[in-house]
Length: 303
Ligand code: GLY
Image (cartoon, rainbow, N blue to C red; front, side, top):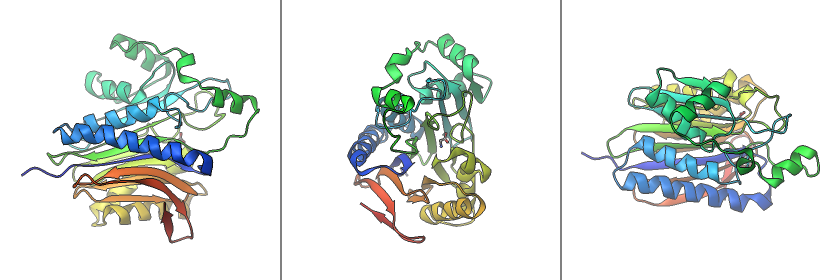
């Protein structure tokens, strides 16, 4: 029997000022539409999450691919991961430059290398070997981020990491996460996003999770794997999302958020950052998209 597919995406957590909320939600909505088209056509969860994340890597509204934050040297360094819930295979890239779609390079690492993660110049060399054309930095750097880096304008958002989690009609789960990391980070800094179990995790036995927020804190609690472990213990997607954020709050001083999809196709969204941008399409094709804002310690408000 075929499963009813589900796709959920996020477009980062953090302050997300009012004037940038529309573009974030629109970007999430576009990504979920493109990924959903893959699933609706009988495509795989892996293809769907890659397609959705590529859309957000192209969208300068997010801190991923084009439009990413600049590091202290005024350069973009990108991290990404993709994971297949069928066999726990994953591919990841860290601190790569001149790559338009880190999620696609991560998938090539998974599918066409004997390794699981490549970093820096070696990852770029692998991209060229596999036929990905070099992306000049002017294609990735946007004026807004140059102004931030020069101190001419205030950085208005703390995170615009992107991610997607999918369940396909065969019942397979997959996840992908992509980021430009923190504003003004030290060259070579790598956050949670490309680290398996931190920025993402997918296991057909439990669920699929993508995280966003302060990587140094998210790594401490291996947040995506923690959410999957909660589902293994019987929690729903929303309960697991809430539990993982409670763990982050209790054990670190960091903030972030995550999207969770369980193997029954239920969606969870949770955060202790002020906001998270998200969108999802569930079995009937109904779309939900918005910014969820934190209202109290225990109750969030979706808009
Ligand atoms: N969560 C993205 C980063 O810290 O790099």
